[in-house]
Image (cartoon, rainbow, N blue to C red; front, top):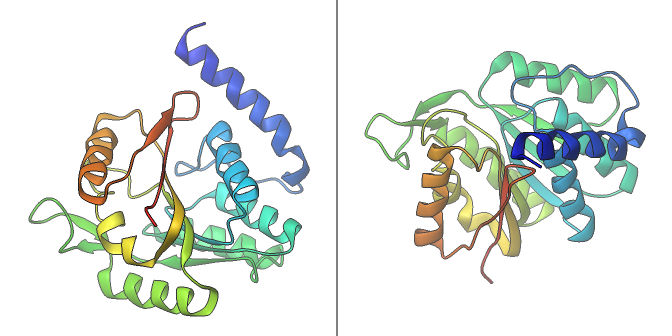
Length: 214
């Protein structure tokens, strides 16, 4: 079975598993996780008893994660998104469905960032992210699941760990989407070297996972 067919079958199987959460139509957005990747994230939330989630880059999949958290009755999600239209849609949908206690979206425009690999590299607005994440962990505790799914160009995702490693709980799970792309692979290699993480990539989900050191 070739890789593309295996991924299609994995996505079809994942869509069936997501059935109970598909309570209302959601559009397919450019920033969304593939169904198989989303199910893998949800499995980690449930099996790992993850309750303090941070997501970089949001979409309709963020609403599904919020539905899962509300269905379980505990857990919180903070999503950070640079695209204003995307952030507004997800925030509006969360309000419509009464999911505000489970998830929150922050619109953080891209700007030059000191942790970026290139001199003029961009990431989410530094002070805004600092303030939002600090307030979040003060309220709910250290982050036990970090999902990196944005920004989506070049090595732009690199600052995620330099910025957020200090708020990760011991044993937290770090998930990175699009791990089959060369730019993301280069970022994963640097994170592994600099933070002592051992990433494992699941080819059928394009998701890489590592456990933060205690």
